[in-house]
Length: 299
Image (cartoon, rainbow, N blue to C red):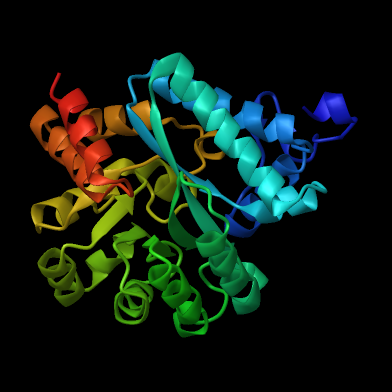
């Protein structure tokens, strides 16, 4: 894609690997790579290719976090960007059968006004595969309270909610998310393990944590998989799922996350199946689709 548009990515991509060294440089690298997608056809091909890769590894369902801000940066309209991703999803489903939904993200580091704008667009744009709202970006920017209104807008508009918390920042970030956003799921949330009372609350309230071990180790949240708290959280009764979180940047895939959970983190096949069933239970889909996914899983 960079060759197609005459872009120099040598500062961010070398020998087939993305180059970054901490969370801030990862964000910069991500932005540079996203910049190589310039047209509706580009975004449609990206969605179709990624979902095709997932399906080839046996994945039956995926949620894509989408950001029309990337489309605007490329000179597209928000609707044009969303139409392109929707077309890629449809093409992948026609070829492989993989089911997919979209979750709109607000960019936390762009401030509350942008995040609220993303929420308003999400509830009004009318794309049927858009079923959730999320806030991603630098968790250190601003307070959760600054963004709570955006989640109220999304909830009132019928969208399911998730929010990045408890990755770069500590358990207070997770507590604020629970108190102020009342999400269905939390992206990461792993640092809740530092507060036993908070862990009990997560288990009692049944809020699902979207855990991404490969990302957490790559970003040095934890030094290695043996130090990762997924086992502690699972054993404490917290509802957890396995996820990949920007897999090319962290040299991982969803299949690798599953393999690592078994080979390096000590989870049995039955325990991993429990996490997969949790993922279906927490998926942002209608009940007919959910039942279909359960049926596929049991085959």
